[in-house]
Image 1 (cartoon, rainbow over the protein chains, first blue to last red):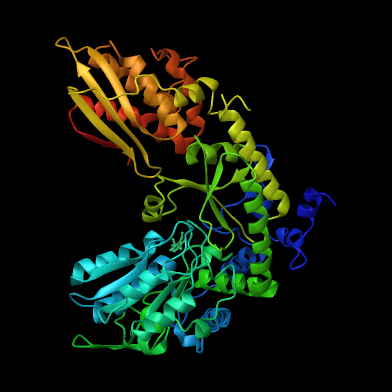
Image 2 (cartoon, each protein chain N blue to C red):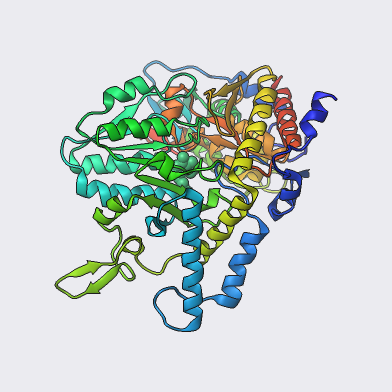
Length: 418
Length: 149
Ligand SMILES: Cc1ncc(COP(=O)(O)O)c(C=O)c1O
């Protein structure tokens, strides 16, 4: 069997060819070529079941949640709270009330910066993040530090894109009030050793927030095994709708934290003198929530769990290995981020060709990648790059698409070889 | 490659071998332009004569091929022209890359600058082509910094 034929053989762990049929967007032609969608780290495509579930909710079941006593509202509340149970199962949360719906990973982090940070972080305290964070896990902490006179400390990263834990150990002190790290780096693909990071923080008495935006859709996550204090992710990167995300928190923290937004649904009683807040999670869900999106997210997570997160992780790892080998075989291509533990995200540069030009030329071949700083400018600065091109994979990608990527890169190099 | 291709041979050639790619010591005006989204950066230097002629125009910086080639073409196009003429070219160029000026039908003085016509089919790349021109404009206005944001 030739290498090409081996690449074309679907993995035994899951049937990606069959699963692709669930995704209407993947049938599109782009610039005369079949779409090769390699931008799932930015946002994933949506399976028909999610699209159908949301339209069915709007067409046949639509009502508000929790506020009204009529039948439709009771049903909507059931569906909404059912989705919360599905999310709790995905993360293996001990209790469903530990799942708070947010707009996305960004809002989840801001909620913790506000609800925990404003209450428990003071002047001279320190918050530790890592050098590979997405801006969503940098800026809220900077804002908090500025407000409180606290300081941001940064775990450095080595040339491969791995966090330097010896340096982290030195940063941890009794002034550390929180550690906030990504589970998987969206710019480099590194899977960070969050278990160890959490143990070390807890030994110093500091809680840990894990930004799971790039992890929860791609590998099994067990918040009890990790023993993290907070875990966030976004629905739209997990085959779910936009505008919805999840914050998991330990109940003892969520109960002690300040609420985030004030309004309806987050209260127990209101008088003009005093308001008492609803129990968690409702304390953090002020206002009419994104009901259809929550229900859609629940369906997306059921869909992922049916395929199996273990199987998804194993299959995507095969894609990563194949794509890494294919790109490394092209002269002039450099892969940025070569950690020993990686998710299926490959940042790369091509000698003498700006990532934006790579992005446009690949798009002309139907290959959709991201080019830019990936909302992680400090990472780019660490490697002395203004930008990279990034191909990111999901379980619906095929080995043949890796070949399409490789061929499109070779064509790009040829166009520029004047 | 389709005839709507962004990358004509001349654009690629100029992006690798840009003209007037140098600083001007003690330039009368200069401006650094930046496109925060993609990290393109160009500094444009201009010397203006007593009669308002752009006697020397040069640039330095780094960016995508469209940005580099556009900066190169701009320096050659405006050198020796009066400021008002340069501003008029900027206006025509801007309309060209936004698809508001059809070089085959509308009156213009763009000359070889029409090689950027196909940028209008790539809305996300309009900023790449126009960044050097914004920097030139701001240099002439003595603003010191330009941004496409
Ligand atoms: C690691 C990481 N954290 C946070 C975010 C922010 O997610 P969202 O924009 O959905 O809130 C992203 C999305 O790009 C990400 O990759």
